[in-house]
Figure 1 (cartoon, rainbow, N blue to C red):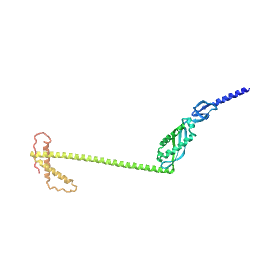
Figure 2: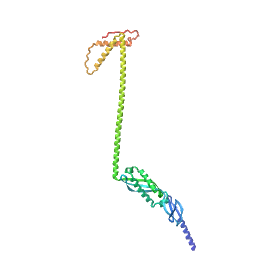
Figure 3: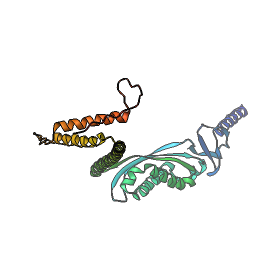
Figure 4: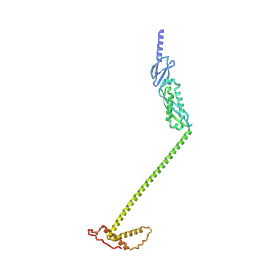
Length: 321
């Protein structure tokens, strides 16, 4: 009876020891195993057996990517401006053993290291650079913190600055500066517009002057051509009259006399201050000269009357006045 009880106790103890040696690791975690207080191995997610009473679980390390908030802190920039900043850090454990044994309180170490480097990086920049180069700040912080935490078996994947709040007087000063810059750009654009308008106006006046000069040149050329044609006609008429005089037709002389007489009367008539015209010559003489011009014209055309039979032409010589 006593042996049976002993056997039952031994069996129960054996089952308990077996259960104590069975360990299940959840997905996303890794467990470190210590034997007599010394790290021996790391358990991956799944079912594992360890030696009870000898091995024990040292640390349960989360292998997922984690987010750590950076508390708000005040940073003094290179140009002595006070700015309040905060942010977030994304990191992931790559080596569970290093994360468990190389540093104590991993998250606290990452937090303090990041806050220190935020002050260092942002304190080396001016306020304008701080507000306009957030991507460069994030990249620089990521490089510095990732290198510093590499011995801890973690990988810092991202650092983001969330908010940057300058002091109120700096915000007002920046608003005034922005307003002045916009007014300056507006004045420059307005001046550029006036300048372009004046340039276009000058170009238009230049083109107008060129076109006007070309028009005057063309008109002068046309006037000269007309005078040339008139002179040619006058020369031809003179030649015809000379030929007529040479042929014995004295009516040609009356042509020139009548022409000059009519031109003189026309000049008198065109004058605005002439109201009365004195004619010292005989009107009959002028009429006779006009008749001579008509006879000369008929002779030049070879006209024989309305019938136009084409017989021999007999010159009609009439004595002029």
